[in-house]
Image: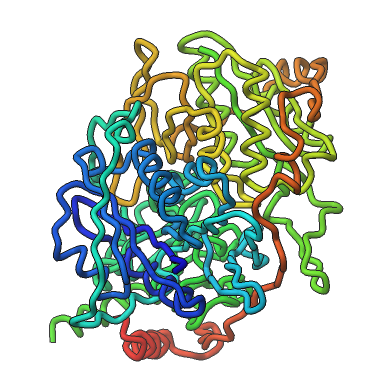
Length: 331
Length: 265
């Protein structure tokens, strides 16, 4: 039986949400192809409960590769193991998240297994006549949507934009198979060494993982006024985003930047405050589920994309929102 | 330290116009620039040369007029440039582009580092850097945000991930893709411009490099673009204009109702 594969991601042994989002994508494809859906996970000392979670969320099979060197992502051993698995099991389709891991590992692997790869897809479909995977992605600053095919090479590979689909329902009692893989030790080598990690003191790293983002733009006028954004973000339990101009002016650090030369995000709520909506910025957030815009310029592009907009002075509107949210919190 | 920087010429995205009927990009009259993220790669390469000596060579694959991008890089201070350009390379996807550029890098030879921008602003795939590293079997650091130390043919870098930063130690030669945080690109100098003007940029086709012709261009590309559509731009949301009589307090209350209804509070 042909197989659709998803790459599950873990951080310190904890499954990341993208692992489940990919199962939602994969389930749809597998059903249409009458294929099996398998999740592949690499790590160290993974607990059975996590592996079962993948099955409860739709995987028919979970391939598990465990070794201390796989505990933290390193491109060489990860790619070696996946190359080994792909050559052993010949999946028809292999998808991963368009995360920093997926966008590093998959292009490296695609060369090693000699196949094509489409980056940062927002939609995946199966072509009726051929059963080929249709990989749909925004390009040219989100101005166009390209549909891409891998007609002759297998597996058909794609990375998928995080948060572009809801996590599938957990089905209690769902059955599946866990396949532990024996890995030849020569594959578990890395010339690159990881010396350490640090999380930034900055509270809003992990912008990509946030359900809500409050983002500030040039309309804030000066660095200090980012405090307004921070206050609102805290009240909404949101991460903090920023336009390129504010980062270039040093008002806030680069990891907050959303857009073509920053991060691509797709949260449930994107609140753009004092952001005019240059297409470079829109490219990084236009697939957000709900977009709220607050800007004093009625012609600002951002209003075209907004589900809800307020034309007005942000220094009047934002404090009013903060005040009202506080009032509701207290009561 | 000898460094090779692959760069890409891209359209100035701010000015991209789309042919509404055909759904294709209008190239005429659109200015071409060096991919903005490649400027950071060039800058960090120049800084490493200042600290450790050696050379910085840029390479670009594209149409003949991509020579302009290479000359701009030279006017920033790069020593040399090479253009990979031939009809045989047209229609290359990221696989074929990575293959072709890896062959060009082999032809240049003698390098300690390959540094690129994390992705190009037009295609936005970020796949060519890792692809080159796979073809050349080079250790790889993507999303590199700073260089900490260079010692004993090893380089220590930090890279930016969803969880924060991680520190990697890579043996050289290796390949780095860099994000904006790593540097601030310098401007071309007058002397650099003069240097660039007099510089001959060699143009390499498939016969100049050790390439298998079946692996380049559209024939060597595993993926095909089958359709281009124009996504709908406007969401027709509710817009309240406080400059036209709506009280901002009322607008705020409506906004909160909207957020509540969408379960976002």
